[in-house]
Image (cartoon, rainbow, N blue to C red; front, side, top):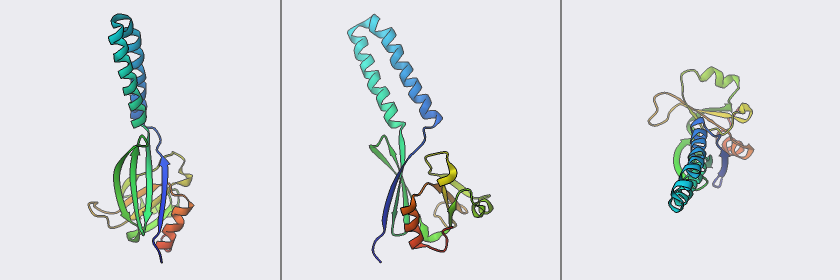
Length: 167
């Protein structure tokens, strides 16, 4: 059996904090344009252009994506900010998982009461959310419940590694 490699990128929904940063950046740029340009002319224009660039950076870095990489039984989830900067994430061994099922299934509802929950989803639509329950994770007391949005290729690759835990 050869190496298995599947990769998927999911755009993360904008949080309220990110929305507040974007609105604040727009407000600061507009206020500087109205106040500084008439008062300070060239210096006001320079400061406003600098603030426009900072507002652009605020928009870029409040945009985030999750990257799921499944390689030989290990799922790595990284966060990508502004389609440029990668924050290394966690790696989970699927061979240690006890269940992989849709998030709204009965199996998940039974087991999810006392678990540490981590959400790597990008949308609020729970129809395509899946849950991985791993009983033995280093650094986590008790079992871990990971919610994510795999596509068919990712689920098929996981099925090839552990067919008996996929529901």
